[in-house]
Length: 379
Ligand SMILES: C[S@@+](CC[C@H](N)C(=O)[O-])C[C@H]1O[C@@H](n2cnc3c(N)ncnc32)[C@H](O)[C@@H]1O
Image 1 (cartoon, rainbow, N blue to C red):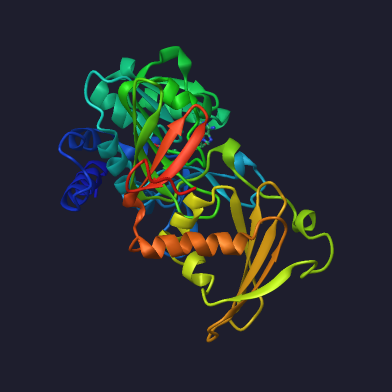
Image 2: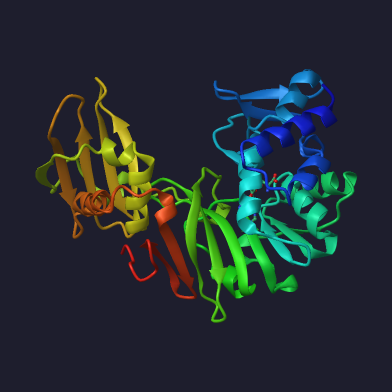
């Protein structure tokens, strides 16, 4: 199959699935995704991210270029040590690309800023529809920026490509009608609403610390406040500056576990939160400064460790298969498991909502998550 045939098949599949709208279909049909991919790509077809080299496996490489799958193009911020621990740049999954473009609701005449240029493919789609003079794209990694610029030029697209921190936006071309981020954040940076025209729209993946992730669609009002709902779940790589490692466990618990912690018991299996995407996302929105680690202790048992970012409190909860009550240990001024359990109770009482019932309000002072309406905040 030729690249053109594969691209036509991708357009047909995305349309059939209801992901690709009629206004974006001509752009997806026209922009050659393979022209934005490097010689070696990594794609997970169900057994981990396997490498594929264009020169060694040209047929497979081209098939993967038009598969509805994310294509990893960089690991570990470009560290050339072969470790390949964390994917740090990619061409996103086509379904996600076109659904986010539908959320963006960009139209000819709109000036758009993209954050996270990556391969340049999404910038090419935007440029095809809106024109080169209307699109700016910001990428933090110098090597990735250079590659995208070359690929874009080679394919005949000349948006403005900037190397910098997209969390600062790109004030030079502001105000924008639309800002789209293709990299995930914990907090929407205040620069984005400030650089968006009143009535303009911001679309971005959001990944709270405690887990889960979803795309939010915010509308900016005249006062620089942005407000809107989550549209769909997502799993994007994190904005470089908002990755969070957490403090060493010793900073919370200097001696041996259980230290000075208080013991209690719960009927809520931590797996009901940590293994349930919607529950985890709801709790994470309610507790934006709480993060977790997981450790196993054999026979299917595992411990959920909870920590606060202020490094004052920790908790552990043991999930043991077949048990109906679970040991809790909590230390510090906050009772982190009690807070998670309360957030989980609120999620249950609200009818176990998916991400679409949640939303965010972003002001210059920070962001607040809410359920159903902005006047029903979670925190
Ligand atoms: C999922 S990829 C983007 C996919 C891209 N839109 C495409 O069509 O190929 C995310 C990109 O965001 C970049 N990134 C991470 N932190 C950033 C930041 N602070 N500012 C701008 N780009 C950033 C990464 O280097 C990576 O290339």
